[in-house]
Length: 269
Image (cartoon, rainbow, N blue to C red; front, side):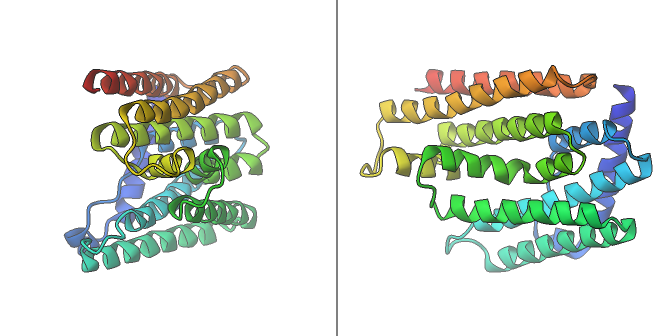
């Protein structure tokens, strides 16, 4: 576990150095580095037969793409007239800036196959973001599939490039669980979230204000998908010869956190 922690800290430090831009940081928040995604990424790369140098570059590059996509999503979440225009414009520029960084690193790596894989992942994420934010899904399954692809497409493409089907399933389902937990928390505490608004539109299309019973039903739908994905993660973890202890700990924490969100809703309700 000590070795994984060292790699995690090292890659995170390198990413922080690359995304640091004094002018942008005067006006917008420092980009968020999801350590769970980074840990999952390092765990996958540790299982590949590639050099440490290449693995490190893959990790930095993939996380820079993720940060760029997440930064763009901040803008999509703030389409109201109240949003500060300059802040939004700078956030867009930040996303472009971080995207440029990953192209630079990949060009130095001279890896056409990985460039193609990650570019495909970006395309998948953006396609499903359009579906989610325009609330265009025609069924709950298609909605949830869009959420999963948004969260995990980069990891899926990386795993596909090295024929790691087990890691693909673990990554896609674990990141899906984590996103649904975040959406549940926002819905429980603030009464709305991107995913739950789309879910409400699909489930109760003619209802403007849903009842407590209907809220519980939406949470129940969400929990069904979480439970299914949890089973998938557990199933494919058994097929991995070795999973580092730190990742195992984070997986159990995510599982437990999901249960605590449900408990909080019951108590507040």
